[in-house]
Length: 261
Image (tube, rainbow, N blue to C red):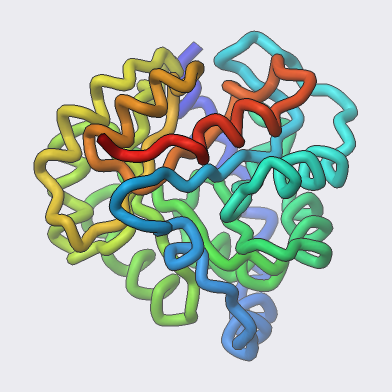
C-alpha cells in the first residue's frame, strides 16, 4: 500500500465536503489568540531531548488496526511520562483520527497540542485552529512547491507554530527556503512507513543550530533516542513506538533522562 498517495486521494475528496465551511472557519480562526507555544515547549536545551508522544487509534507501521482506545487515558499516561507536548493524529482511515480528538484533548491539556494531518488546503489550517491546536505539521512531500509557502505563511500568520515535516534533502531545502525555524525529520518513508533513524543523522547536518529539530520514526529503544540526541536533535516524536507498551511512561522517562555526552 502507498500510504501517502492513498491519504492524499481521500483528502482531495474530503475537501469538497468542507470547502463550503471555509468562510465560517476562517472567521473563527482569526479571532483566536490563546495559543500555547509548542515550539518553545519542546526545545528544552542543547543537552537533552524533549518527548512528544502521539495520540492515535491505529498504528499501521506496527500492523495495529483501529481500536476503541481511550484517548484521555492515553493523554494522561503521556503527561505522567513527562511529555512536553502532544501530537494528535487527525487522519481517519489510516490512523483512526478525527478533529473531535483534537478538540477533546485541547480542552483538557496542560501542554501544547499539535494537530498532525496531511494539510493541503487553508481550510484545514482553519479547522486545526478552531478545534484548539497550538501547532500543525506541514508534510512537504504532500504539498506542491508553489502551494507550500502560502500554507506556511497563512498558518504562522494566524499564530500557529508550524513544524515542517521532511524526509529528504530536497524537502529540507524547500523548508529552509521558507526560513522555517521548526523542522521534523521523519525517518519513515511516507509511502511505505519503513523507518531508518539514519535519515535524521544525515539530514540534520544541513540545518543551522537556530532551527528546532525533532526526529520521528523508528525510535524504538533508548539507544535509538541517544543516537538522535548525539546527532543534534532537540526532541523525538513517539508514535507507534509506544503502541505495544503497557507502561509507556517508563520509556518516555528513560529518554528524558538522557544527557548529551
